[in-house]
Image (tube, rainbow, N blue to C red; front, side, top):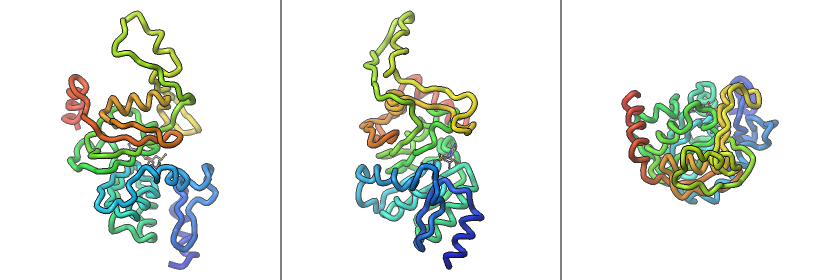
Length: 252
Ligand SMILES: C[S@@+](CC[C@H](N)C(=O)[O-])C[C@H]1O[C@@H](n2cnc3c(N)ncnc32)[C@H](O)[C@@H]1O
C-alpha cells in the first residue's frame, strides 16, 4: 500500500494510543505524550520473556491498537487479543494486516470479566494498563488467574513508594495502626477523574500490587521495570475466596 494511503488511513482511524512502526516507516502516533510508546516498555520486558515463543498461546487483555500482540506474534506466539473498545480493535485489525501478522492473531471484542465464561488456557497472559481502569480489580485478577497457565506480564498505575511493610498473619480488631504504615498494601480510590480520565479508578502502591497478585494466586512475583511485574500462575484462592469467585462465575 502506498505511504500516502497509509497515512490517510492512520488519520481516519485515529486518535492512536499506540505508536506502531509500520513496515513502510510510517508511525501511528509519532508525537505521543509518553514518547515512543509502548516500544520502550516492550524493550524493558523483553529480557524476561522466552526468546522463542513458537507454539505459545498468548492472551493480550486490553490489546488497544495491538502493539504487544504484534511483537508476540512476530516471535511465534498464537495470540488472542481482546479489548472492550471497537475503535481500538479496528486499528489493531488494520495494522495486523499491514504488518502481516493477522493470520496468528484473533481479535475479539471482549471484556476481561467475560473471560470467566471461557475455558481456554493461555501460556502467557499480557495484562498491561487495564487494572486501574476496572471498578472490580481483584475480581478481574481472580478471573485472569483462572485462564493463565504459566506466566503473566502485568502493569498497573501505582502510587509513589517502594516500601513493603512486613504484614503479620493476623491482627486484633483494635490494632489498625499498622494499616497506616507506608508499606501496607493499599489502593487509592479515585472517585472522579485522574489525568482527565473518569475510568481511572484505582492506584495501588507497590506492596498493594504484590499483595493483590498473591491473593489472586500468582507466585514468583518480580518487579521487572517501573510498574511492571512478571509472575506465574500458582494455585487459585481457596476457602471463602474460592466460594465467592465461584458465585461470580455462576452469576456470569
Ligand atoms: C491504557 S490502555 C492500555 C493498552 C495496552 N494494554 C498497553 O499497555 O499499552 C487500556 C486498554 O484497556 C481497554 N479496556 C478497558 N477496560 C477493559 C476491560 N474491561 N476489558 C478489556 N479491555 C479493557 C481499553 O479499551 C484500552 O484499550
